[in-house]
Amino acid sequence: MSLLDDASIVITPNGVKAGTLYAVIPSDGTADVHCVRASATTEVDSTGLPVYVAPNVPRIELSGGCPVISSEPERENLVFPSDLAVTQTRTVAAVEHVLTFYGTGTVVLTGTHSATLAGTGDTDRVQLIFTPTAGSLILTVTGSVKYWQLEEGSYPTSLIETETGTVTRAKDQYSRDGISSLINSTEGVLFVEVKTTYDSSLSRRISLSNGSTSNRVSIEFDDTVENKIKVFITLNGASETLQYTAPDLSIFNKIAVKWKANDFAIWFNGSAVVTETAEPRVPTGMNQLSFDGGNGANFFYGEVKQLQIYKTTDIDLASLTS
Image (tube, rainbow, N blue to C red; front, side, top):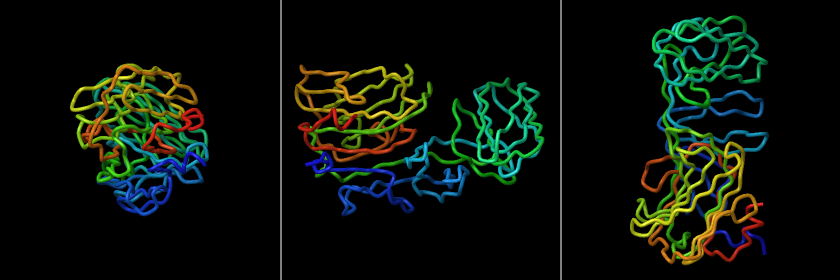
């Protein structure tokens, strides 16, 4: 018998439509995940270039040749048009920015920041992360500069298409409620294969919950310490917290959380890295899966290769996370 025979929910970068990411298990639609994103966006196709994705359609990116579920924060593209760059001056704040583009041309930055970003190929996306002073940033374009973007943030996000002015893309939100029959609050395993970029302004979480933070099992990618994982196992507002600092969360890792009275653990890439055997408290009434903290805040942003839920702890966690 395989691990998948024991799984109550399996979600992969599978079929999508507007508002829905289909679950592999169960196949009857009861665990299909709802996707909300109030604006259009783009994803990278097999040619390495951005293509249009309609509002509320889950974004399936290719990461190293493998499809992944992509979830991104709200961002604004400050330059326009995005398809073919032209020299312009933009007013910027004194916060971290990211400039990206495809092509073989060059963008020279002057004014509130001095730098040069040179392209390396038509299907290569180059990036520059910098912090300007507040004021007018001049971007001088020469040569072929396509699909360019200037956004506030510490890392680049997918292209936000612009024409005659700046455009803001809404954040991705993934959740499914009404699945209490597929979650065992008394014991179980939440497994994810993910990567995420550290952001000191944002705690990113994936949770099983009762629609609040009062009863939940939540995996947090910390905003105060880079590469730190926190797990919250909460009953009626009282939490047991497990913590582990991973080698590198910006690459794909397999993470499993096990909960059962007096038997909590974090498994990471084939090994149990944190255990707790003295805590009898487990959640109650969990009926929701969400890419957030369980209460519509602390959204997860990153890439997910797979997510699985088990209603028992009696599974081979070493095999699952290896």
